[in-house]
Image (cartoon, rainbow, N blue to C red; front, side, top):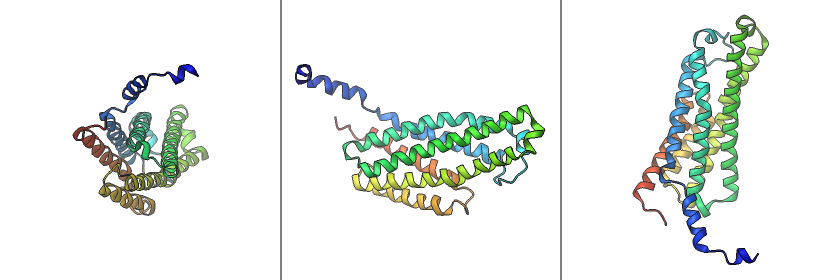
Length: 227
């Protein structure tokens, strides 16, 4: 206890400076956006959007799908870093309620993204072992429908929740401009209610992350730090 009472405050300040998020950390969000767009585009080109399709893509486009699956872990790491950048920008202004929903929706999105990628990777492995038996089996159709529902229903809805909570915190705390928050609301409503009608809705979330990360990066470079 005596050691804590006589602790040098300059040491704490120095440690805080070393742990401070670097200004260029917002690049992680831009990297996530680029990787996720690449994953979605590869899958959109290679795999038919209808979950009842017979599985011809396994023999004709498996290399493109395998590349997309291998990019997913790197996109997930970049997204975790992006969440850290947003929380660092909020700082002491972070609200417990909105932060819980914000953090939870981000982790749920990431978990479902990894789950969908693991199911697709399992299909590729099973097809390489038994090509004929997999396509005609109920296992293939179950896994294919599961991936479709995870990506197009549950994961997409979590991105909408993530954008809404982030935009709400931006309005209440001012860590981002109001126009960016309004844009987040509009795009979130588009994802929540229009994803079934719009085939290109999968690009909404990564584009929003890219715009947000670009603003944070430019703002960190232009404006001097509080320190």
